[in-house]
Length: 180
Length: 206
Image (cartoon, rainbow over the protein chains, first blue to last red):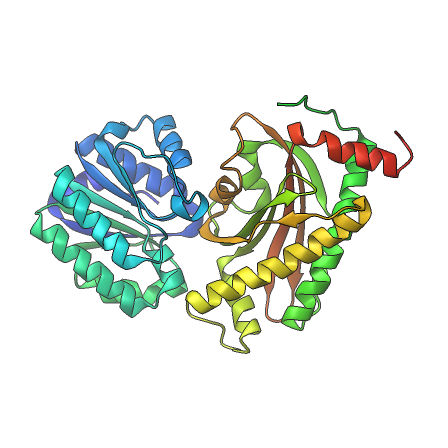
């Protein structure tokens, strides 16, 4: 699924991308490449991949890691005391949305980002119902708006995601969905 | 690091048979938990680089729930129980007697998954312990939600990227509700020598 964030983010500040499962990894990689090319400071909220394999994968794709600050919600589930890393803050687990929110706020305050990339809302839906996840995203959008930056959210194109996508459609400037 | 052993076809067959025993026990335990017949495939045994393990266990982009643990006594290795997300939710629905399945994994469901992981891991390893005539212990399982290609990263945080691993993997399923999954036992080749020695002795080859 072709997503042209470079162009979409010029006219839309809040974007939700809905991606078919089998195209997810490639689409995310393409979006990160676009963010890398368009911005100098990006917050990458990662809820699926351990920090080292994620950084390695991005490096392999010639992404400039110096431009990214990672809010990592998953590494601590596997390594309780991960080594401190520059431009990375750990959250205990992806289902701890309060700590996730606090961590994102901290990075918004200190990193002076241009854009926030949230990967992915589908992970939150594993642990909470769509209403709670919607509230979380609304609160995050309020912060993003307060800092005047752009934000891109990803989620899978699944049955479980339908209610969330419907609920968020009114809040987003653009929802990019696969062709029906 | 100790020397990497070469595995003969016979040894791979023997390890596959070993996996059969473990998987048989695990599937009986799982069957008792879900109240359904659990069908298991023939175990696959292969020696692969660490980076290829994820693709061997599940489809790369598929969202999965992994229940994983490492062996801490008797043997050195990792055990992983992978379920596609839809299967994990169906399994939880079955365990909680909810025909409609469950909507999300709350704290209660996560605990239930950990317990299920412990029961299945215990059953799997009991078969191996019997074969090798020694006690095998494992750490409390961890639960993770990720995509297929990344699941193995969680298991392999202590293993170098350039390692080769012996992967013994078997798929299982139930019909109603449809639950698919994979049990995987993984040893780094560098830690496999004592296990092979025991296997050879057991088979009168040493």
